[in-house]
Image 1: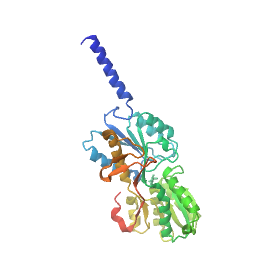
Image 2: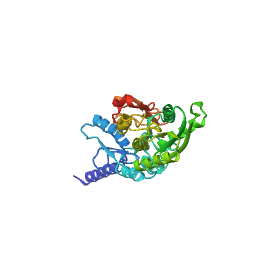
Image 3: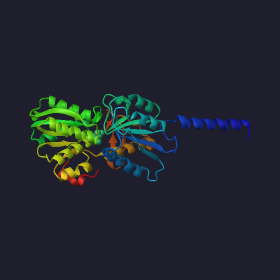
Length: 346
Ligand code: RAM
């Protein structure tokens, strides 16, 4: 090989190496597979395992030989506002193509998201949005049209307590974007002086931080502090399970109705023994499922995520991104009670 050819070859190698380093958000580091990350609010919450089922299902359909995608499920132990930052940074460092994240704050991750996107990583908020910070993410996969949840939860409790009495809300963390969206809309509905809710009084909102022990303590404290309490809405699967357990232990299901958003698999025993009168939820696995199809559409089918864009998501059919950059996985929350125990699959 003459000198000119050698120089050309070395140059080409350098260009290829540089391309691999600077490609950003793709196949550069390690295995050569496209990396998909799922960062839940925190590990150890079975709700996020339910979302994960959908990621796994779609990956099996699209990549049965496991040669195309690496799926990494990682996150903090507890859901504090800033606890996910280091996980996002590490994912970007590791060449993530897409990060699906159930953010613990509306805005604490904005700079981290900006940096990730600059480096070619898609930021997909999953199971919620980050109100006020939408410009810092690519798309938000919402479990349903979130604007319907506050009304649905209030209507549910209204039916259980005959529209009368004091009630409290047992939430997750004070920063949680999803719970705060729902609580804000419940407060707005109650402030409208709708005669339907005239005899229902929200006495307190407490926070169990999506930790079973703290949620139990908060529920116990509510019962002590509000002797006339008729109901509790816990719009968190961790909170409702802990609060209903308190009802079960004390045998007071007739006195206080606990409802909210529950994970069917965790709530089944309470439905069966009558400690829970029913609750709402959606289809968590569908969120992960369509997320994988969205990544695959971009990697293999020339799709670019953005308002108005559509892609095919296997058994879920055509998914279209709303003008707001949101995807609504289903339209509205669905009721789970003793009449549809066969639907308690996740
Ligand atoms: C908890 C989490 C999650 C929420 C569900 C309903 O598991 O707070 O973010 O969507 O409840």
